[in-house]
Length: 459
Ligand code: LLP
Image (cartoon, rainbow, N blue to C red; front, top):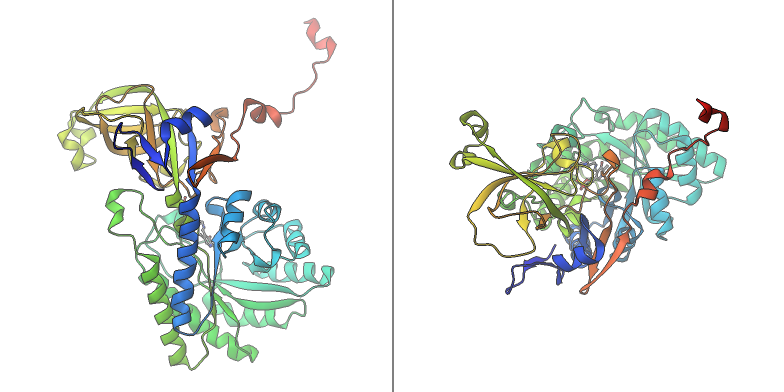
Protein backbone atom coordinates (compact mmCIF):
# COMPACT_ATOMS: atom_id res chain seq x y z
CA UNK A 1 0.00 0.00 0.00
CA UNK A 2 1.07 3.57 -0.34
CA UNK A 3 2.14 3.80 3.27
CA UNK A 4 4.34 6.70 4.20
CA UNK A 5 5.37 8.50 7.30
CA UNK A 6 4.09 12.00 7.93
CA UNK A 7 7.01 14.44 8.01
CA UNK A 8 5.93 16.00 11.28
CA UNK A 9 5.05 13.36 13.84
CA UNK A 10 6.16 9.98 12.53
CA UNK A 11 2.59 8.72 12.18
CA UNK A 12 2.21 6.22 9.34
CA UNK A 13 -0.25 7.22 6.66
CA UNK A 14 -2.05 4.75 4.44
CA UNK A 15 -3.59 6.29 1.34
CA UNK A 16 -3.22 9.74 2.99
CA UNK A 17 -5.03 8.70 6.19
CA UNK A 18 -3.21 8.44 9.49
CA UNK A 19 -3.02 4.96 10.98
CA UNK A 20 -3.99 6.43 14.36
CA UNK A 21 -7.17 7.93 12.88
CA UNK A 22 -8.09 4.65 11.22
CA UNK A 23 -7.79 2.71 14.46
CA UNK A 24 -9.65 5.36 16.39
CA UNK A 25 -12.53 5.16 13.94
CA UNK A 26 -12.61 1.44 13.06
CA UNK A 27 -10.88 -0.27 15.99
CA UNK A 28 -7.84 -2.49 16.35
CA UNK A 29 -6.69 -4.81 14.94
CA UNK A 30 -7.64 -3.61 11.50
CA UNK A 31 -7.14 -4.83 7.97
CA UNK A 32 -6.62 -1.86 5.65
CA UNK A 33 -6.69 -2.18 1.87
CA UNK A 34 -5.60 0.64 -0.37
CA UNK A 35 -8.22 0.38 -3.09
CA UNK A 36 -6.31 2.70 -5.41
CA UNK A 37 -3.28 0.43 -5.19
CA UNK A 38 -5.33 -2.75 -5.70
CA UNK A 39 -7.06 -1.29 -8.75
CA UNK A 40 -3.84 0.06 -10.18
CA UNK A 41 -2.11 -3.31 -9.76
CA UNK A 42 -5.07 -5.12 -11.34
CA UNK A 43 -4.95 -2.75 -14.30
CA UNK A 44 -1.20 -2.79 -14.78
CA UNK A 45 -1.03 -6.60 -14.51
CA UNK A 46 -3.79 -7.01 -17.09
CA UNK A 47 -2.23 -4.42 -19.39
CA UNK A 48 1.27 -5.93 -19.16
CA UNK A 49 0.02 -9.40 -20.09
CA UNK A 50 -2.26 -8.13 -22.85
CA UNK A 51 0.40 -5.84 -24.30
CA UNK A 52 3.09 -8.52 -24.45
CA UNK A 53 0.79 -11.12 -25.99
CA UNK A 54 -0.60 -8.59 -28.47
CA UNK A 55 3.02 -8.06 -29.54
CA UNK A 56 3.13 -11.71 -30.68
CA UNK A 57 -0.36 -11.55 -32.13
CA UNK A 58 -2.29 -13.24 -29.29
CA UNK A 59 -5.04 -12.24 -26.90
CA UNK A 60 -4.77 -12.60 -23.13
CA UNK A 61 -7.52 -12.75 -20.52
CA UNK A 62 -6.65 -12.07 -16.89
CA UNK A 63 -8.66 -13.62 -14.07
CA UNK A 64 -8.30 -12.39 -10.50
CA UNK A 65 -7.80 -15.43 -8.24
CA UNK A 66 -10.47 -14.62 -5.68
CA UNK A 67 -9.08 -16.96 -3.05
CA UNK A 68 -6.40 -14.33 -2.31
CA UNK A 69 -9.01 -11.95 -0.91
CA UNK A 70 -12.59 -11.97 -2.04
CA UNK A 71 -15.56 -9.94 -0.91
CA UNK A 72 -18.26 -8.17 -2.89
CA UNK A 73 -16.19 -4.99 -3.14
CA UNK A 74 -12.94 -6.60 -4.31
CA UNK A 75 -14.87 -8.64 -6.88
CA UNK A 76 -16.32 -5.38 -8.24
CA UNK A 77 -12.98 -3.59 -8.29
CA UNK A 78 -11.49 -6.39 -10.36
CA UNK A 79 -14.42 -6.59 -12.76
CA UNK A 80 -14.30 -2.78 -13.15
CA UNK A 81 -10.62 -2.98 -14.04
CA UNK A 82 -11.34 -5.43 -16.83
CA UNK A 83 -10.40 -8.66 -15.07
CA UNK A 84 -12.43 -11.86 -15.03
CA UNK A 85 -12.94 -13.71 -11.77
CA UNK A 86 -11.58 -17.09 -10.73
CA UNK A 87 -13.47 -18.84 -7.92
CA UNK A 88 -12.62 -22.08 -6.14
CA UNK A 89 -15.83 -23.01 -4.32
CA UNK A 90 -19.58 -22.53 -4.33
CA UNK A 91 -19.09 -19.92 -1.60
CA UNK A 92 -16.67 -17.85 -3.66
CA UNK A 93 -19.05 -18.22 -6.60
CA UNK A 94 -21.91 -16.87 -4.47
CA UNK A 95 -19.85 -13.80 -3.52
CA UNK A 96 -18.87 -13.04 -7.11
CA UNK A 97 -22.47 -13.47 -8.30
CA UNK A 98 -23.66 -11.24 -5.45
CA UNK A 99 -21.18 -8.63 -6.68
CA UNK A 100 -23.04 -8.63 -9.99
CA UNK A 101 -20.14 -9.96 -12.04
CA UNK A 102 -21.37 -11.24 -15.37
CA UNK A 103 -21.37 -15.08 -15.01
CA UNK A 104 -19.65 -15.55 -18.36
CA UNK A 105 -16.59 -13.85 -16.84
CA UNK A 106 -16.24 -16.42 -14.05
CA UNK A 107 -13.94 -19.46 -14.06
CA UNK A 108 -14.69 -22.18 -11.52
CA UNK A 109 -11.84 -24.23 -10.02
CA UNK A 110 -11.54 -26.98 -7.44
CA UNK A 111 -10.32 -30.56 -7.22
CA UNK A 112 -13.50 -31.84 -5.59
CA UNK A 113 -16.48 -29.68 -6.38
CA UNK A 114 -19.75 -31.08 -5.11
CA UNK A 115 -22.54 -31.98 -7.50
CA UNK A 116 -24.60 -29.15 -6.00
CA UNK A 117 -21.77 -26.67 -6.69
CA UNK A 118 -21.41 -27.91 -10.26
CA UNK A 119 -25.17 -27.68 -10.87
CA UNK A 120 -25.26 -24.17 -9.46
CA UNK A 121 -22.34 -23.06 -11.60
CA UNK A 122 -23.88 -24.54 -14.75
CA UNK A 123 -27.29 -23.03 -13.97
CA UNK A 124 -25.72 -19.63 -13.28
CA UNK A 125 -24.05 -19.70 -16.69
CA UNK A 126 -20.48 -19.69 -15.39
CA UNK A 127 -18.04 -19.07 -18.25
CA UNK A 128 -15.77 -22.05 -17.68
CA UNK A 129 -15.48 -24.92 -15.26
CA UNK A 130 -12.05 -26.41 -14.75
CA UNK A 131 -12.12 -30.20 -14.83
CA UNK A 132 -9.66 -31.58 -12.30
CA UNK A 133 -10.50 -35.32 -12.29
CA UNK A 134 -11.90 -37.99 -14.57
CA UNK A 135 -15.08 -38.19 -12.48
CA UNK A 136 -15.65 -34.48 -12.98
CA UNK A 137 -15.78 -34.85 -16.75
CA UNK A 138 -18.94 -36.93 -16.41
CA UNK A 139 -20.36 -34.91 -13.53
CA UNK A 140 -20.13 -31.61 -15.36
CA UNK A 141 -21.42 -33.21 -18.56
CA UNK A 142 -24.42 -34.62 -16.67
CA UNK A 143 -25.18 -31.24 -15.06
CA UNK A 144 -24.92 -29.50 -18.44
CA UNK A 145 -27.15 -32.12 -20.10
CA UNK A 146 -29.72 -31.71 -17.30
CA UNK A 147 -29.67 -27.93 -17.80
CA UNK A 148 -29.84 -28.33 -21.57
CA UNK A 149 -26.65 -26.34 -22.15
CA UNK A 150 -23.21 -26.93 -23.58
CA UNK A 151 -20.79 -26.06 -20.78
CA UNK A 152 -17.39 -24.61 -21.54
CA UNK A 153 -14.64 -26.40 -19.67
CA UNK A 154 -10.89 -26.41 -19.24
CA UNK A 155 -8.85 -29.49 -18.46
CA UNK A 156 -6.36 -28.94 -15.65
CA UNK A 157 -3.13 -30.74 -16.30
CA UNK A 158 -0.07 -31.12 -14.19
CA UNK A 159 3.01 -30.02 -16.10
CA UNK A 160 5.32 -31.71 -13.57
CA UNK A 161 7.32 -28.53 -13.05
CA UNK A 162 8.83 -28.26 -9.60
CA UNK A 163 8.28 -24.67 -8.55
CA UNK A 164 10.73 -23.45 -5.94
CA UNK A 165 8.45 -22.29 -3.16
CA UNK A 166 7.12 -23.68 0.11
CA UNK A 167 5.99 -27.31 -0.30
CA UNK A 168 2.41 -26.43 0.54
CA UNK A 169 2.38 -23.75 -2.16
CA UNK A 170 3.70 -25.92 -5.01
CA UNK A 171 0.99 -27.48 -7.12
CA UNK A 172 2.66 -29.06 -10.09
CA UNK A 173 5.21 -31.64 -8.98
CA UNK A 174 3.96 -35.17 -9.67
CA UNK A 175 3.05 -36.20 -6.14
CA UNK A 176 0.23 -33.80 -5.23
CA UNK A 177 -3.50 -33.60 -5.70
CA UNK A 178 -4.08 -31.04 -8.49
CA UNK A 179 -4.45 -31.65 -12.21
CA UNK A 180 -4.23 -34.72 -14.40
CA UNK A 181 -0.94 -36.13 -15.65
CA UNK A 182 0.41 -34.36 -18.72
CA UNK A 183 0.66 -37.65 -20.61
CA UNK A 184 -3.08 -38.22 -20.29
CA UNK A 185 -4.02 -34.87 -21.85
CA UNK A 186 -4.73 -36.24 -25.32
CA UNK A 187 -6.84 -39.14 -24.06
CA UNK A 188 -8.89 -37.04 -21.62
CA UNK A 189 -9.09 -34.01 -23.89
CA UNK A 190 -10.44 -36.20 -26.69
CA UNK A 191 -13.00 -37.67 -24.31
CA UNK A 192 -14.13 -34.17 -23.28
CA UNK A 193 -14.26 -32.93 -26.87
CA UNK A 194 -16.51 -35.87 -27.77
CA UNK A 195 -19.07 -35.05 -25.05
CA UNK A 196 -22.07 -33.38 -26.66
CA UNK A 197 -22.73 -31.24 -23.60
CA UNK A 198 -19.15 -30.05 -23.07
CA UNK A 199 -17.11 -27.56 -25.06
CA UNK A 200 -13.36 -27.84 -24.52
CA UNK A 201 -12.21 -24.24 -24.19
CA UNK A 202 -8.66 -25.00 -23.19
CA UNK A 203 -5.99 -26.49 -21.01
CA UNK A 204 -5.02 -25.17 -17.63
CA UNK A 205 -1.92 -25.42 -15.47
CA UNK A 206 -0.88 -23.63 -12.29
CA UNK A 207 2.52 -24.54 -10.86
CA UNK A 208 2.30 -22.95 -7.41
CA UNK A 209 2.29 -19.68 -5.54
CA UNK A 210 4.75 -17.01 -4.27
CA UNK A 211 7.25 -17.93 -6.99
CA UNK A 212 10.27 -15.72 -7.73
CA UNK A 213 12.17 -17.87 -10.25
CA UNK A 214 10.49 -17.36 -13.61
CA UNK A 215 12.04 -20.36 -15.37
CA UNK A 216 9.31 -22.61 -13.94
CA UNK A 217 6.60 -20.55 -15.64
CA UNK A 218 8.40 -20.78 -18.96
CA UNK A 219 9.09 -24.50 -18.69
CA UNK A 220 5.48 -25.20 -17.73
CA UNK A 221 4.22 -23.18 -20.72
CA UNK A 222 6.56 -25.09 -23.03
CA UNK A 223 5.37 -28.46 -21.76
CA UNK A 224 1.75 -27.44 -21.91
CA UNK A 225 2.14 -26.29 -25.50
CA UNK A 226 3.50 -29.71 -26.41
CA UNK A 227 0.34 -31.51 -25.31
CA UNK A 228 -1.81 -28.64 -26.56
CA UNK A 229 -0.51 -29.27 -30.10
CA UNK A 230 -1.00 -33.05 -29.84
CA UNK A 231 -4.52 -32.62 -28.54
CA UNK A 232 -5.42 -30.22 -31.35
CA UNK A 233 -4.22 -32.77 -33.87
CA UNK A 234 -6.13 -35.57 -32.15
CA UNK A 235 -9.45 -33.69 -32.13
CA UNK A 236 -8.87 -32.20 -35.56
CA UNK A 237 -9.11 -28.53 -34.54
CA UNK A 238 -6.95 -26.20 -32.45
CA UNK A 239 -8.01 -25.78 -28.83
CA UNK A 240 -8.85 -22.09 -28.34
CA UNK A 241 -7.12 -21.29 -25.07
CA UNK A 242 -4.21 -22.00 -22.77
CA UNK A 243 -4.52 -20.93 -19.12
CA UNK A 244 -1.14 -20.63 -17.42
CA UNK A 245 -2.47 -19.95 -13.89
CA UNK A 246 -0.98 -17.46 -11.45
CA UNK A 247 1.64 -17.72 -8.74
CA UNK A 248 3.75 -14.56 -9.19
CA UNK A 249 5.62 -13.75 -5.98
CA UNK A 250 5.59 -10.45 -4.09
CA UNK A 251 7.95 -8.84 -1.57
CA UNK A 252 7.09 -9.41 2.08
CA UNK A 253 10.39 -8.13 3.47
CA UNK A 254 13.11 -5.82 2.22
CA UNK A 255 15.24 -8.92 1.55
CA UNK A 256 12.61 -10.00 -1.02
CA UNK A 257 12.61 -6.71 -2.91
CA UNK A 258 15.54 -7.51 -5.18
CA UNK A 259 14.24 -10.98 -5.98
CA UNK A 260 10.71 -10.11 -7.07
CA UNK A 261 10.36 -10.35 -10.82
CA UNK A 262 8.28 -7.59 -12.45
CA UNK A 263 5.15 -8.80 -14.22
CA UNK A 264 6.20 -6.87 -17.33
CA UNK A 265 9.31 -9.05 -17.62
CA UNK A 266 7.42 -12.28 -16.90
CA UNK A 267 4.82 -11.34 -19.51
CA UNK A 268 7.53 -10.60 -22.08
CA UNK A 269 9.33 -13.89 -21.43
CA UNK A 270 6.11 -15.89 -21.55
CA UNK A 271 4.92 -14.23 -24.76
CA UNK A 272 8.30 -14.97 -26.36
CA UNK A 273 8.40 -18.60 -25.29
CA UNK A 274 4.79 -19.19 -26.36
CA UNK A 275 5.38 -17.53 -29.73
CA UNK A 276 8.66 -19.41 -30.35
CA UNK A 277 7.21 -22.77 -29.36
CA UNK A 278 4.16 -22.27 -31.58
CA UNK A 279 6.27 -21.21 -34.55
CA UNK A 280 8.52 -24.26 -34.10
CA UNK A 281 5.47 -26.53 -33.89
CA UNK A 282 3.87 -24.83 -36.87
CA UNK A 283 0.66 -23.98 -35.01
CA UNK A 284 -1.26 -20.76 -34.41
CA UNK A 285 -0.77 -19.07 -31.03
CA UNK A 286 -3.80 -19.77 -28.82
CA UNK A 287 -5.55 -17.21 -26.66
CA UNK A 288 -3.86 -17.08 -23.24
CA UNK A 289 -5.36 -16.77 -19.77
CA UNK A 290 -3.75 -15.99 -16.39
CA UNK A 291 -4.93 -16.12 -12.79
CA UNK A 292 -2.86 -13.90 -10.48
CA UNK A 293 -4.18 -13.32 -6.97
CA UNK A 294 -1.42 -12.36 -4.53
CA UNK A 295 0.39 -10.14 -7.05
CA UNK A 296 -2.65 -7.90 -7.32
CA UNK A 297 -4.03 -7.70 -3.82
CA UNK A 298 -1.11 -8.67 -1.53
CA UNK A 299 0.85 -5.40 -1.59
CA UNK A 300 -2.37 -3.36 -1.27
CA UNK A 301 -2.99 -4.53 2.31
CA UNK A 302 -1.63 -3.45 5.69
CA UNK A 303 -2.70 -4.79 9.07
CA UNK A 304 -2.67 -2.49 12.09
CA UNK A 305 -2.30 -3.92 15.58
CA UNK A 306 -2.07 -2.43 19.05
CA UNK A 307 0.62 -3.54 21.48
CA UNK A 308 -0.73 -5.02 24.71
CA UNK A 309 2.29 -6.42 26.53
CA UNK A 310 6.05 -6.72 26.10
CA UNK A 311 8.43 -9.27 27.54
CA UNK A 312 12.20 -9.43 27.24
CA UNK A 313 13.74 -12.88 26.94
CA UNK A 314 17.49 -13.34 27.35
CA UNK A 315 19.13 -14.98 24.38
CA UNK A 316 21.59 -17.60 25.46
CA UNK A 317 24.17 -18.75 22.93
CA UNK A 318 22.06 -21.59 21.57
CA UNK A 319 18.84 -19.57 21.28
CA UNK A 320 20.64 -16.88 19.39
CA UNK A 321 22.38 -19.45 17.22
CA UNK A 322 19.41 -19.82 14.85
CA UNK A 323 20.00 -16.58 13.05
CA UNK A 324 23.52 -15.15 12.97
CA UNK A 325 22.02 -11.68 12.76
CA UNK A 326 20.61 -12.17 16.26
CA UNK A 327 24.10 -12.57 17.70
CA UNK A 328 24.53 -8.89 18.40
CA UNK A 329 21.49 -8.89 20.68
CA UNK A 330 21.47 -10.00 24.29
CA UNK A 331 17.72 -10.33 24.38
CA UNK A 332 14.64 -10.66 22.27
CA UNK A 333 11.63 -8.52 23.03
CA UNK A 334 8.34 -10.38 22.64
CA UNK A 335 5.74 -7.82 21.66
CA UNK A 336 2.18 -9.12 22.02
CA UNK A 337 -0.50 -7.56 19.86
CA UNK A 338 -4.29 -7.77 19.81
CA UNK A 339 -4.47 -10.07 16.73
CA UNK A 340 -2.33 -12.93 15.51
CA UNK A 341 -2.76 -16.27 13.78
CA UNK A 342 -6.52 -15.70 13.65
CA UNK A 343 -6.12 -12.79 11.21
CA UNK A 344 -2.88 -14.03 9.62
CA UNK A 345 -2.02 -17.73 9.91
CA UNK A 346 0.68 -17.56 7.21
CA UNK A 347 3.69 -17.45 9.60
CA UNK A 348 2.28 -20.48 11.46
CA UNK A 349 1.35 -22.35 8.25
CA UNK A 350 4.32 -21.60 6.01
CA UNK A 351 6.91 -19.92 8.20
CA UNK A 352 6.10 -16.76 6.21
CA UNK A 353 8.16 -13.65 6.97
CA UNK A 354 6.77 -10.17 7.43
CA UNK A 355 8.15 -6.84 8.57
CA UNK A 356 6.78 -4.55 11.24
CA UNK A 357 6.94 -0.78 11.78
CA UNK A 358 5.96 1.48 14.61
CA UNK A 359 2.97 3.39 13.22
CA UNK A 360 1.87 5.94 15.81
CA UNK A 361 4.94 7.99 16.67
CA UNK A 362 8.57 8.68 15.99
CA UNK A 363 11.13 7.23 18.38
CA UNK A 364 14.85 7.82 18.77
CA UNK A 365 15.30 4.80 21.07
CA UNK A 366 17.92 2.20 20.19
CA UNK A 367 16.57 -0.66 18.07
CA UNK A 368 15.51 -3.82 19.87
CA UNK A 369 15.31 -7.29 18.35
CA UNK A 370 11.62 -8.18 18.41
CA UNK A 371 9.25 -11.02 17.73
CA UNK A 372 5.72 -9.80 17.32
CA UNK A 373 3.32 -12.41 18.62
CA UNK A 374 -0.44 -12.68 18.74
CA UNK A 375 -2.97 -13.24 21.47
CA UNK A 376 -3.91 -16.85 20.70
CA UNK A 377 -3.10 -19.89 22.82
CA UNK A 378 -0.25 -21.30 20.74
CA UNK A 379 3.45 -20.59 20.80
CA UNK A 380 3.44 -20.70 16.98
CA UNK A 381 1.10 -17.69 17.01
CA UNK A 382 3.67 -15.40 15.44
CA UNK A 383 2.92 -12.26 13.45
CA UNK A 384 6.46 -11.20 12.64
CA UNK A 385 9.16 -13.67 13.50
CA UNK A 386 12.15 -11.37 13.48
CA UNK A 387 12.54 -7.65 13.04
CA UNK A 388 13.70 -4.61 14.94
CA UNK A 389 11.57 -1.90 16.55
CA UNK A 390 12.56 1.07 18.70
CA UNK A 391 13.46 -0.32 22.12
CA UNK A 392 10.86 1.87 23.84
CA UNK A 393 7.94 0.13 22.09
CA UNK A 394 5.24 -0.08 24.74
CA UNK A 395 1.62 -1.00 25.41
CA UNK A 396 -0.70 1.27 23.41
CA UNK A 397 1.70 1.66 20.51
CA UNK A 398 0.35 0.94 17.06
CA UNK A 399 2.21 -1.47 14.77
CA UNK A 400 1.80 -1.88 11.02
CA UNK A 401 2.53 -5.08 9.12
CA UNK A 402 2.73 -4.64 5.35
CA UNK A 403 1.74 -6.86 2.41
CA UNK A 404 -1.15 -8.54 4.21
CA UNK A 405 -3.67 -8.08 1.40
CA UNK A 406 -3.53 -11.67 0.14
CA UNK A 407 -4.28 -14.91 1.99
CA UNK A 408 -4.70 -13.22 5.37
CA UNK A 409 -8.37 -12.34 5.63
CA UNK A 410 -9.19 -15.28 3.34
CA UNK A 411 -7.32 -17.76 5.58
CA UNK A 412 -8.49 -16.14 8.82
CA UNK A 413 -10.23 -18.00 11.62
CA UNK A 414 -11.82 -17.12 14.91
CA UNK A 415 -9.67 -19.52 16.87
CA UNK A 416 -10.12 -18.93 20.61
CA UNK A 417 -13.34 -17.10 19.67
CA UNK A 418 -11.34 -14.03 18.77
CA UNK A 419 -13.54 -12.01 16.40
CA UNK A 420 -12.18 -11.35 12.92
CA UNK A 421 -11.27 -7.68 12.40
CA UNK A 422 -13.10 -5.56 9.85
CA UNK A 423 -11.61 -4.70 6.47
CA UNK A 424 -11.44 -1.03 5.60
CA UNK A 425 -10.76 0.21 2.08
CA UNK A 426 -9.20 3.56 1.29
CA UNK A 427 -9.92 5.38 -1.91
CA UNK A 428 -9.24 9.02 -2.78
CA UNK A 429 -8.36 9.72 0.84
CA UNK A 430 -11.65 8.30 2.19
CA UNK A 431 -11.93 5.18 4.35
CA UNK A 432 -14.95 2.88 4.49
CA UNK A 433 -15.73 -0.60 5.80
CA UNK A 434 -15.92 -3.24 3.08
CA UNK A 435 -16.20 -6.27 5.35
CA UNK A 436 -17.52 -5.68 8.83
CA UNK A 437 -15.71 -7.20 11.79
CA UNK A 438 -17.16 -10.08 13.75
CA UNK A 439 -18.98 -9.29 16.96
CA UNK A 440 -19.49 -11.48 19.99
CA UNK A 441 -23.03 -12.09 18.72
CA UNK A 442 -21.60 -13.35 15.43
CA UNK A 443 -19.34 -15.72 17.37
CA UNK A 444 -22.28 -17.13 19.33
CA UNK A 445 -24.73 -17.11 16.45
CA UNK A 446 -24.00 -20.63 15.26
CA UNK A 447 -23.83 -22.35 18.65
CA UNK A 448 -27.02 -24.28 19.20
CA UNK A 449 -28.15 -23.25 22.66
CA UNK A 450 -30.63 -25.83 23.98
CA UNK A 451 -33.45 -24.61 26.21
CA UNK A 452 -32.88 -25.75 29.78
CA UNK A 453 -35.86 -27.93 30.62
CA UNK A 454 -37.32 -27.10 34.06
CA UNK A 455 -36.72 -30.54 35.66
CA UNK A 456 -32.96 -30.36 35.11
CA UNK A 457 -32.81 -27.48 37.56
CA UNK A 458 -34.10 -29.72 40.42
CA UNK A 459 -30.73 -31.32 41.19
N1 LLP B 1 -4.90 -20.34 -9.90
C1 LLP B 1 -4.98 -21.49 -9.19
C2 LLP B 1 -5.51 -22.67 -9.83
C3 LLP B 1 -4.56 -21.52 -7.86
O1 LLP B 1 -4.63 -22.65 -7.18
C4 LLP B 1 -4.04 -20.34 -7.27
C5 LLP B 1 -3.60 -20.33 -5.87
C6 LLP B 1 -4.00 -19.17 -8.03
C7 LLP B 1 -4.43 -19.21 -9.35
C8 LLP B 1 -3.49 -17.87 -7.49
O2 LLP B 1 -2.18 -17.93 -7.08
P1 LLP B 1 -1.40 -16.58 -6.69
O3 LLP B 1 -1.26 -15.76 -7.95
O4 LLP B 1 -2.21 -15.87 -5.67
O5 LLP B 1 -0.11 -17.04 -6.17
N2 LLP B 1 -2.52 -19.82 1.05
C9 LLP B 1 -1.25 -19.74 0.37
C10 LLP B 1 -1.42 -19.61 -1.13
C11 LLP B 1 -2.26 -20.69 -1.72
C12 LLP B 1 -2.46 -20.51 -3.20
C13 LLP B 1 -3.49 -21.42 -3.70
N3 LLP B 1 -3.73 -21.33 -5.09
C14 LLP B 1 -0.46 -18.59 0.95
O6 LLP B 1 -0.95 -17.93 1.85
O7 LLP B 1 0.67 -18.34 0.55
